[in-house]
Each structure stands twice: as C-alpha cells, then as structure tokens.
Length: 276
Image 1 (cartoon, rainbow, N blue to C red):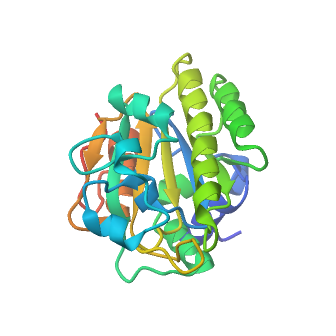
Image 2 (spheres, helix red, strand yellow):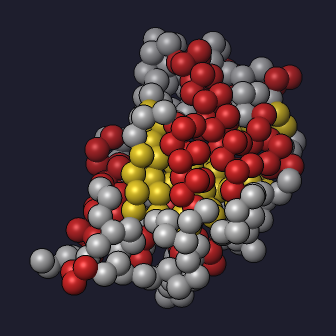
C-alpha cells in the first residue's frame, strides 16, 4: 500500500489506524509524549470565548451577544475568559494554560469541510504517522477514558476528541454558554486526572475556524477566520501568546512538534515559546 503524506495525515485524524506497512507502528515521537486534540466542531466563537472586554467595538457589534465586562474573568487589561470557563481560568492562574490569539492562515476558508481538511493538511507528518484513537459520544466521559488509557505504557500517542454544536448561526447565547460549560468541566477534570499519572500530555483545543466579529440578525454569528487556540499541560508556559497580527496555525503546530514531541527540528514556520 503506497501511503503518501496526505494519506497519512488523513488517516491520523480520520480513523484509528496505528499499524502501517509491515505491521509496525511508525514511532516518530522519540520521547513518547502524548498529544490530545480537542476539536470544537462547527466553528467556535472565539470572541465570546476569549472576550475583548476593553474594546468598545465589541459591544457595538454584539448588542445581544456580548459578554458584560463585569462578568469576564479578566486575564489582563484587554481580554478575559467567558465566565463559564472558571476551571480554565484557574489553570491559567497556575500558568499551565497558554492562549494563542488570532490563529489563522493565508486565504482562510469558511467552508466547514474545506477548513477541516486544511487543518489536517497542515499537520506535521509525524502526527499522522502515529497510532491515533478517536472518541465519539459524551465529551467528559471520553476525556476520562483517555486519562485512564494514558496510565498505560501501551496508550496511543495521539488522541482526538470532538465536542460538537459550535455552528451557532441562530440563538447562540444559551447554546454557546452551555457548550463552554461542558468544555470547561471536561477539560478541568481531565487536567486534574493527568496530574496523577507519570506521562507527559499536551492538550490542543481548536476549531475549524472562528466566527464573525459582529452578530447577525438571528441572534447568532456567522463563519469567520481567526480564532484563539488553547494549549494545556505541565510543559506549557502559561499566558497569552501571539505570532503577530495573525498567528499562523503552522507556527503552533511547529512549536508543539519540535519543543514538546521532539520529532522535527526543520520547520520553516517561526515557533512561539509556549512550551518549556
């Protein structure tokens, strides 16, 4: 079977494969570190996740959806977390949560399928060549299953979990608030569990794209481009990070690949120092 780079990447996110030609797993993560990919399917509203509470334009653009400034869990003088992300706020205070702002890529797609494919195409080849486990169903329960498996030396090196429902074109407010609560509860519990195991684990939380800065006429938001990415783990240098006015997604991937997984040191994209 001729496995091209594209096929490896597609298999890495699209199925649980693990065994390649000859029946052996390609081990391109020499340090056996584990990567957990959390996909917020549908296009998460980054502006109501990492809230620009000091920007008056945000409140003008979102008369019904904007998070009141007094409710925001403030991280600095300009941005803060949605009030339903209290667990992540505590992890941020522990300096184990890195928030990478305005992540995107040139000529960004606003098509769900195309944007998801681009995220896969950009993945380093070493990620797609690993045994990958995918999880469907209850979000928190799946994270707990991952934590249990990580205590085993035989655990997969890449795990992918979806949390669906983020395509909030209509009636966004309560739907998005509930999703953020579910996300926060699941990630907080998982982070507590992995503290107890002797494994290096990194979580990357992302979506296929962000959403529009302004709300629409239906109490929702439309497809956008840039988004904040969350990275959690013991090796994370907590704080707010960016790689310019738009942080190239491939710089995030390159940083994780080189500084956490130690699998490649020849990336062409500038790294960001959110791994210690």
